[in-house]
Image (cartoon, rainbow, N blue to C red; front, side, top):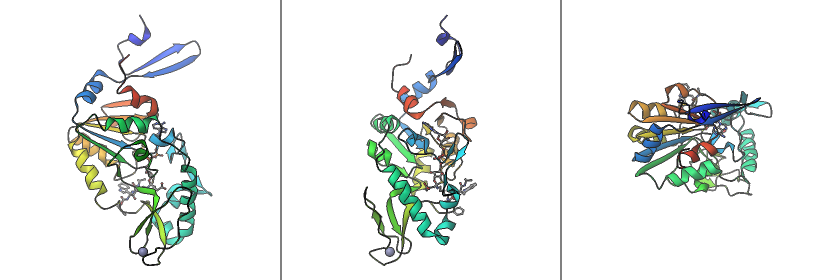
Length: 266
Ligand code: BJW
Ligand code: ZN
């Protein structure tokens, strides 16, 4: 019997002399739910952009560090108060890294899914704008967008064009500008979490892609979906804080795994 036909439907380990190859499969249950669902929520994190070349914050045993500072120190509300120029420099550096990067097959697959379902919501923790570049519309950005600056005083917002550096002061009131992103200890954009929570509550299928699932309140969305009766599926090469709560865990990179949802079963 072919090893791929053994009764374990989701993940099969094939021993090839010295090599071990993992083949991830989507269960019939998940495939059926994906085909019949009317309402789907996709929650994404840094891992969905990893294959575009965007570094993740955590994962693989590493934590992002910049100039000796762990990212949760530099990306914090406290640092805005203590050293705004350093925060601006950190985000200028990140914007430079992001500028040439393009959406990858995972972003594009998610964008294609929009047409399949009556109700389809992408909620992202990412600030890179790559979902929108891939063609997704109505994306709920929980943690803001690196391509915008905001005045620390009057809340005016300014788009930052690729290749241009952001001006330091607000045209309206002259106060300092800061990146329009949500740092640790800061509130999420008004209404964004509420909208995402509503979609989580209503969805039949919730697919969580490329997030470690430890940052709140984003990490509570899968919990909300599951409690309200949704089928919960995770796509990630590593196990995460969410894995044990999922109905199905698909172990692997987003680019390859997401394409399996619409390709013919093997
Ligand atoms: C792949 C892959 C491939 C790799 N394919 N996968 C309740 C309990 C405890 C604490 C709190 C709580 N509520 C709030 C808090 C505090 C805090 C928090 O959650 N802390 C935790 C760390 C414990 N939350 C906040 O402060 C939030 N604000 C808030 O709650 O306001 C209310 C409030 C205010 C004041 C006081 C009290 C309450 C705001 C959170 C903002 C997070 N901001 C950041 C930085 C943004 C700016 C920047 O970019 O610098 O957002 S932190 C960082 O983490 C970033 C991310 O969006 C976020 C999530 O990370 P993500 O996306 O999960 O990435 P990683 O790197 O962690 O994981 C990548 C994953 O991809 C890994 O699993 C890999 O395996 C996988 N992967 N390759 C698929 N190819
Ligand atoms: Zn202003």
